[in-house]
Amino acid sequence: MGLGYAVGVVGVLFLAHAAYSTIQYRSLLKITEEEFSGPPITVVMELVGGMLFCLWASLTVPGKFLSILPQSDENRVVALPANLDFMMFNHRGKAFPLGVDMKLK
Amino acid sequence: MVSKTEDEQLIRLENQVENGGGGTWEYLSLVRKLKLRRSDKVFKYGSAILADPKKRSALGPEEWTLYEQVAIAAMDCQHLDLAKGYIKVLQGKFRESKRVGRLEAMLLEAKGLWSEAEKAYSSLLEDNQFDQVIHKRRVAMAKAQGNLAGAIEWLNKYLETFMADHDAWRELAEIYVSLQMYKQAAFCYEELLLTQPTIPLYHLAYADVLYTLGGLENLHAAKKYYAATIDLTGGKNTRALFGCGSAIAQLTRGRNRDDKDNSELQSLSAAALEKAYKQQSPTKVSALSSALRSLKVSS
Image (cartoon, rainbow over the protein chains, first blue to last red):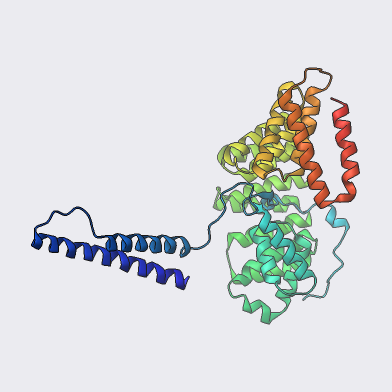
């Protein structure tokens, strides 16, 4: 969690630095009066690295993925809840008193 | 709904609690969360917590939830005097509470004082006529007195107002099945399938009802719903596998027309059954294969 968060921050810093260096590069081009055809290769590499870091962080920081398959163990319903709202007390349990504890109160 | 992981967790906790390994409160919370009826165990372990003032106060505000849970469990175990004691405690804490009033009426019900309980419920309904639980209690009361026709009448009246209540639909379906009124039960299960199409157990119950009704069309539909159950459970529901096989056996009985899809489906479900039995109970494999053979012989 802490590691993922740190990597995410580093990734965002990388992206910000890439943007800053592109602006710098363009202003440099203006002085030398050259056409802007694309950012230099180092900036592109920085961009890709920052993107990968951000991607990794955004997949790990929020937590574990849950299964969406209906047959997976987390989703497969094996029993319905006992319909407790319709519970009734007039049943055969009456004939078998619970002989465990009569000690309370 | 109890999923497979929750079921495993419950079994683990139950074993742990029974062997005195602690985790009683977690167990009771899980039983409450999954809405299970484990009254004997809840009563045994819950009352042990409530009898110990130190453990009881450690729960904080959850203490009162436990009182309610154990009171209901005590009524279910016919320990009415203890249930009365717990309800008294709740009454002392929450005066004029409808929820405690409901518990008192349930105690009357457990004692078998039907007319008094009925009176208590109707006075509670006068204050709030949209209290779903009380309407349901009346249905349960009719059922407890063996008056299933009355229960059906109450439930139908209730469902006219609260159509989205799937628990009530399920209860109605189960009552109809117990009275062998399968057409009506099938209707209820259709409602359940519409509201919760992802729960395989409703598909399975609907298929069972259709299979019981019989007839070519119903058997075809039953086969499809068994197949849907197999699809939703990934083939881990034994009843659906058996149902699929026997529905096809019924469909092809007395007919020489060899349907390729049907026989393929039947052999696939038989293979899945054999695999599951070999893994989980190898001693019963021979019984299974003779049962499967009888299904195929009749086709």
